[in-house]
Amino acid sequence: MRKLFGTDGIRGIANQHPMTIELSMKMGKAIASIFQNNGKKHRKILIGKDTRISGYMFESAMLAGICSMGVDVLLVGPIPTPAIAFLTTSMRAEAGIVISASHNPFYDNGIKIFSDDGFKLPDEVEMKIEELIERDEFQKEQPTGKELGKAFRIDDASGRYIVFLKQSFPNNMKLDGLKIVIDCANGATYKVAPLVFEELGAEVIKIGVNPDGININLDCGALSTDTLKNKVIETNANLGVAFDGDGDRAIFVDEKGNVVDGDHIMAICCNDLIKNNKLNYNTLVTTVMSNMGLEILLKAMGARLIRTQVGDRYVVEAMRSGGYNFGGEQSGHLIFLNHNTTGDGILAALQVLAIVIKTGKNLSELAKIMISFPQILKNIPMKVKVNPVDIPGLDELQKKMVKDLNGKGRILIRPSGTEALMRVMVEGEDKTKISEIASEIGFFLEKNNFA
Image (cartoon, rainbow, N blue to C red):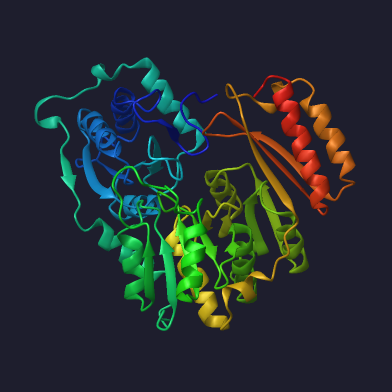
């Protein structure tokens, strides 16, 4: 079992375990040790971050750890997570590190790592990093003198990423005549996203582009879309897009101010890919959280849906192992493997806009392709992280509730990978019924003193 890494890297309150500068320095040493290529003279590791105030200290600590192992560091500053995936491969680096807690509040921070192929690390490599940190034997390997690493700041990193994004958009299309509202969550996309859409010709109305270190994700971004919805309606925009703090996911708002989640976006994109014979093996990869309505739609299209555990890295792993090229999550991670190796909010928005232009349809009309089953989500606070199988009586209750759904619904109970929460999802045809079931499960957890 991994002790530090969760479903998406390491995450926690900045300056408290595990997100301390001491551990960050050791993490830098461990990463440098694992990704050292002794046959290569100029070994290098990228470090990027979002806009959190704590990013400065973690960046400096990791830089020190990496350089102490004789590996150079390329600093790219605040930039989206998918940009690090792209730049790591483009610049032939040994690894790429992102300092970000994604959609979490500013007082949290985290660390994600990409290998030289642009993909997130598999579990076994993360466990190896943990093992090296625990042993703390780096002093035996540390170089001295001219063998120490150096740090370089890459000033044109954002420009390289912007060119990459624009190349993912069809060459014969422009965004001329479209009015788009974008919410950058005062996070990593605040510079890049407006430029991409403006350079392609759109009229861009910007929200959340004034980061101050503590306002990232604060009443804005993919988890707080009220401001975006109001602005779309107020400005009579064609659509709105909200990114999360590190820019690896996107949530859309149609021209009527309605949220269009990742499931509906996957339905829209799958329809387009299937029609153009571009969906590998006619298969979409998503997680256990995606709505049953998506599965039913794909079946009607002659396609299939493969589910993984929650986490975009598990979606990507399944895509790579099966040769599939499109996948994602209900939460807005959308992975177009033909373009990038991880979820990319800006790139996903460009793919959706291309479909809007090609079809001549508004997003609200496109979203009608899928009918969602009612779905209730509950987050139950826990005193400590606990596995559902270790809670006496919970399995029996879940089986009873599943039986009550008569094969027309699903129940999913899982621990959060990043917080001390139990996530409960109940889905079915009858909203009243699933609400009762979700409440009963939540009450059970509280009654049994697990909350």
